[in-house]
Image 1: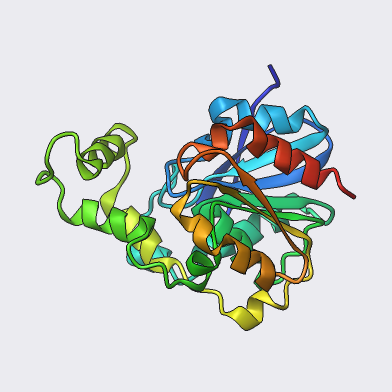
Image 2 (image 1 turned 135 degrees about the vertical axis):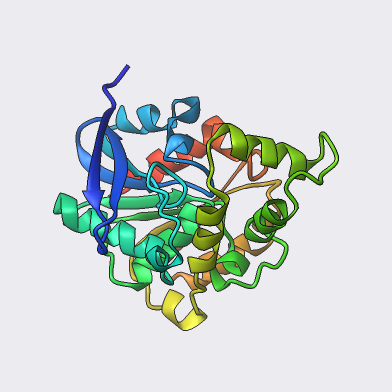
Length: 252
């Protein structure tokens, strides 16, 4: 098993944020989804599998979702997650690197690209054009806000009640999570069209977001699509998911 190293870095406003890394080789920054810490990439051995193909895998937490949970709304200006991602690149002094993310992390990858990040390659996982444009009403963000607003009222075993239990088990802070959701901004089509980085959209075939995956690929000047088995939750555990990412990153 590869060694996992934990460190921290300052956001642009001075908030200390955590990241983990493993492996050696070309840096690959991987952003998590709307969950706690960077554990998405540690599940199913995802990070280790990628690292064994010659990558230094760097996995930051999102503020409000990891160890750093400031409760002041002022700590969550618009696009702060992209700010934090760019701050990590600066902190590590990365010039030659790749960038990827899944779910919310995929959306923040696009935000970083349109704001000046220039990785060699980018992976946008589990997000279609609707999500990137910000017009996906009823999506994960809306669902989470509904859970936060109705805590203690949901029928046992319902998706809302299960999510509420998961949030409690993972020490999520409801106020911080609301602030995170309020900080996310849309990316307009014209900005997407200016991205000149080869970008892979990797999507579960049963993910409801797959409906606009082709449209996102078409909007990205150097977009490519990989459909893998599974829905939004299970696609990351499919062997085809890691294979698609490794093949894409190796295609230099």
